Structure formats: structure tokens, C-alpha cells
Image (cartoon, rainbow, N blue to C red; front, side, top):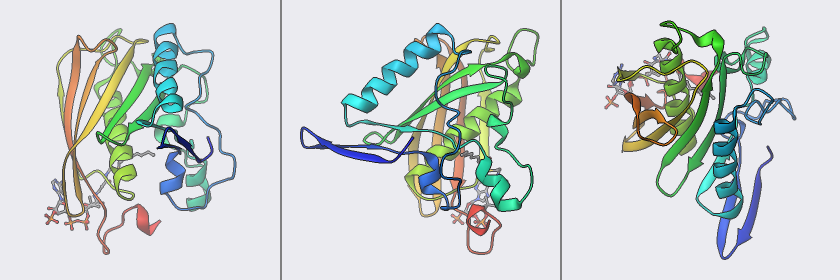
Length: 216
Ligand SMILES: CCCCCCCC(=O)SCCNC(=O)CCNC(=O)[C@H](O)C(C)(C)COP(=O)(O)OP(=O)(O)OC[C@H]1O[C@@H](n2cnc3c(N)ncnc32)[C@H](O)[C@@H]1OP(=O)(O)O
């Protein structure tokens, strides 16, 4: 998805992807893993269309996509791939798309959990849930400031997530303290009635002497 900026009713709409806040060493046209594919269920598609419409018609949502990790290969000259995008079989693992709401410093992720993410029988592995939370909070904090590393993540699992289901992951900036961004996150059913997981995280921009992304 290309960077676009247009004026509408005196409001400005931005649409950009994660690669614009990371070094400009990406391939020009990385695969956009956030676009709908044949594995997306009805719920995933309806939510995607809902938030996408907000992006197009309102000034509140910024749509964010991940570039799929091709840039990592460029950086370290290996076959490294972004963890959440490293299985090419559509629907098998992490299907997700992120929308960033600038005015309320909120991020919404629609996540459909594929069959390779099983933990307890018929349900999503806790590590896979934490991975998605880390991805959402890390991306959110990076978009608000500069590339960050997760220093601390506290996860409370409240109710299991059925494999194959679609959930909402919403993150909010709680506090900004210098280089540190404190983000809280909730994973719920798509109608918000069932709480699956709660988390809080601290994502600082790496200091000069650390080995964070700014040093890659
Ligand atoms: C596009 C997809 C996006 C995906 C995003 C995914 C995000 C990730 O998963 S990142 C990978 C997992 N995280 C890591 O590997 C990080 C490993 N740790 C590190 O590299 C470093 O410890 C790092 C960068 C977090 C902090 O390094 P550095 O900046 O040198 O540390 P330091 O100056 O001591 O700490 C900065 C501040 O954070 C605080 N802090 C550091 N670690 C922690 C911690 N574990 N818990 C709470 N606070 C902490 C410090 O107290 C300090 O606060 P203050 O400024 O008030 O004194």
C-alpha cells in the first residue's frame, strides 16, 4: 500500500505502512500480507471492510500493513523472514491486518488464527497469542515514535481462543515517558463481549549503546 495523502472536508487522510517508519532499504514492492486472501472467513472480511471503509471515508484510521519480512533478508543477507508472515500457505497461521487510529492513539488488529497455531486442543497456543500482542503493541509504539524493542510484556490469559476464529486485538497508549512507551492491549471476540487476553507492555526506543533496530 502506497503512502497517500488527500484533503477531504478540511481533514487529512493518511494511509501508510510500517515500512515508512523503518529504514528505506526495502524492496520497492513487497508483498502485502495484510490484503484479503481466500482463507479469510466472513467475519474477518466484514471487519476488514468495516475498518477499511473508515480509512477511506474518515480521517481517523490509518491502515498499516507489514512488508512481510523481505527487508530483513536484505539487512542480514540471509533467509530471515518476519515471524508472523513466514508461512505462505494462506490461512495456516497468522492472518491479520492492523489499523491505527491516530486521534485516540489506538490500534486495532483483526486476527484470524490458523490451524498451525494450535496449543490446547482446538484452541490457540498462548505463545501465538503473545506473539500477536507483541506485534500489535510493538508496531503501535513504533508508529507513534520510532522503531522500538519490547522490554517488558505482561500477559493475562482470561479465556481460550478457538482455533480458526477471528478476534480483535486493541492496543492503547497508556503513557509516554521519555523513550518508553507504555501500551495496554486487549484481545476480545469480534463483538467485544468476550475477553480472551489482557496485556501491558513497555516498548522503549533502544538507547545509543543498545543493539536495537536502529543499529541494524
Ligand atoms: C513490524 C513488526 C513489529 C514487531 C515488533 C516486535 C517487538 C519485539 O518483539 S522486539 C524483540 C523482543 N525484545 C527484545 O529482544 C529486547 C531485548 N532488550 C533490549 O534490546 C534492551 O534491553 C532494550 C532495547 C529493551 C533496552 O535497552 P536500553 O535502551 O539500552 O536500556 P535502558 O537504557 O537500560 O532502558 C531504557 C528504559 O527502559 C527501562 N527498561 C529496560 N528494560 C526493562 C524491562 N525489562 N522492564 C521494564 N522496564 C525496562 C529501563 O528502566 C529504562 O528506563 P529509564 O529510562 O526510566 O531508566
